Length: 264
Image (cartoon, rainbow, N blue to C red; front, side):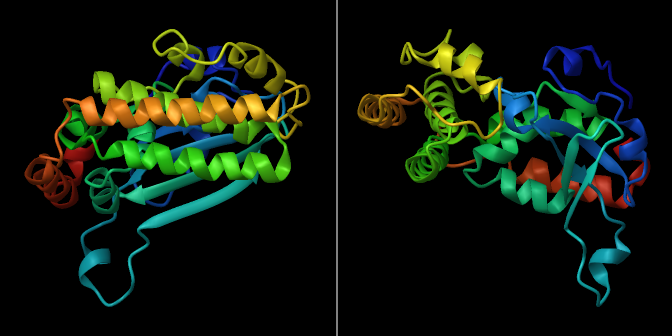
């Protein structure tokens, strides 16, 4: 199903005609969306394009002796010289990931930067609320700590912004039940350090630029404060402790696998 590319242009994607790329996939795609810095709202002029999605394997690939290709990954340079990266999971694997407290796959599923969509994609989106739990806070807490360590080691602006983005996404999710990955929008929803708009602007200059002018001690205090806020938001969250969408996802995977026409 084709989509309007206006939203991709507005997000700063240097390449928006992705139909020929996706048409070359070996297995039917159920959806493909844009992730990474373009989704997070702080792409640089030299940012690559991260595409993520779901394919569906034929039933015979899962019942024979050969190992199924549950995850496919490829990288290439576009005609414009932009680095492209496409990673897709088979529907069954993706559904299993959805049932874990994995915010990353939900950000891919719910990304507003849609390159390709189908009826199954819409069904998966509709099921997303049934898999959200308070335990998703662990994902964002862990991701933020990993990115903070990367910032401490490299001094680059990108992991610093990733740190703040992860914490603010986690806080907002715990409070509202909404998966929101776009940092500029998050700044209107969650109280955040006043330096972030300036850092977003600075990030536009280079994907791996340094965080010149950033007071590391102050940044560390801001990060620790947001960790405490995330802890409180998790404790107070009305989200359930466990996902409830297993049966509905199971039925969807079986139907999409055995009746390929329903995946269109």
